[in-house]
Length: 321
Image 1 (spheres, one colour):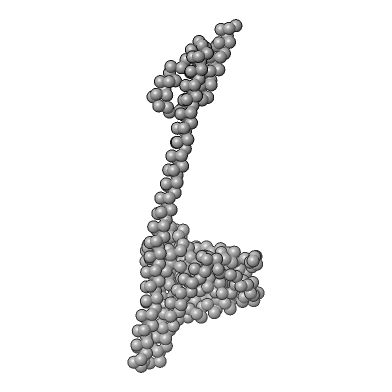
Image 2 (cartoon, rainbow, N blue to C red; image 1 turned 45 degrees about the vertical axis):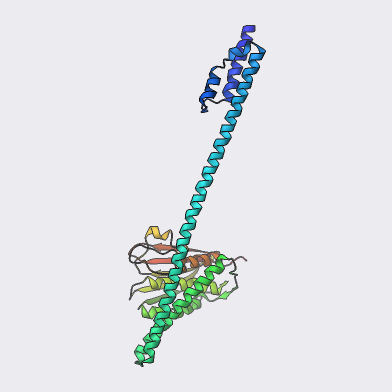
């Protein structure tokens, strides 16, 4: 019976050691040597010997826990370091985009002002009526382009600072689209673009922010004109569908590749690929998306290379305040 009890005790001690020191634990040579000298049957020899060995096991347990804690802390620091490196890279990329943005703004404003000054010089010399009208169109387009750039910068800042408040009113959407088209008439004429308006007849007024909706339409139209070849058609449609207002703007330009479509709404982003890359602020489509979301809607891009691009805006008919 005594031998049986001793066997039970020996078995329990072995299990205790396995719990305290898992088999997969990597331990130092010193700790391993200490474990090698521990024989559960030896612990039964005397109380003094057992107490000494238990203290040794306790010491090994503490050593293991310290190493486990250290390993956990090292892992936490590694993750933190990786996160900081990622944030640092994002800051560097943002700084580069900011520099490119400022250069683009300076380029756009300089081009607009320079074009205007040249036209003024020509007007001083006296010209025919037809040429006079053409130059006035160019002058108007140049300064309207500059004004749109400044508006985009201002509204992008206001949207970022959450200071862009909604002012809801009943809006005649077809008439608003016609007004936006007239504002771009000079640009349309200079680029010899045809404009096809497909507007739902007898559309009831829509409760929305007129100024924000006008900015969305203008930016999409301006973008379509910019990327359309001379002599092509830009189409704009508007209709009510179930509980949404649907506005579509389509051009017949070179189209946008799938990779660029994933980035096209990013702030300051400009494509560097293909013949449709252009110098600009990279704010127009980003601001458009921001304003659409301000009206609790969404904007999607449907495009493929060589087949033009269509932007589809879906706005709920009722906007919650």
